[in-house]
Image 1: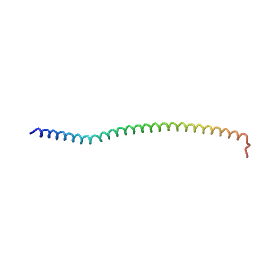
Image 2: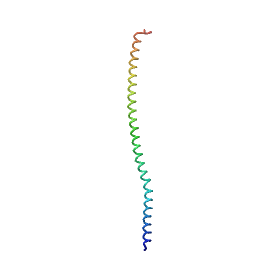
Image 3: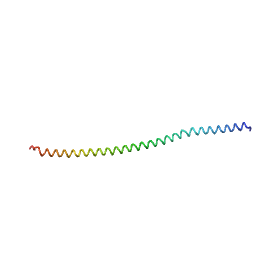
Length: 96
């Protein structure tokens, strides 16, 4: 073997390693991007779920307070209506 053949064999070996590396990189690159995207999407989804849970809890508490306020107002109106009805029964003559 001459030095030209040895250099040519080394050149082919380096070229083969380069092609293999290029094939590996073209497969590995999209996989890494996909994994990063999945991780970011998962984190965003968890954050959205937490926000929705917090929003739901806040609205339920707010609605409970409003319902309690409404119940209190209805109770006060019922007491006032009973008082007015009693006054009317005392003041108006009963028809026989």
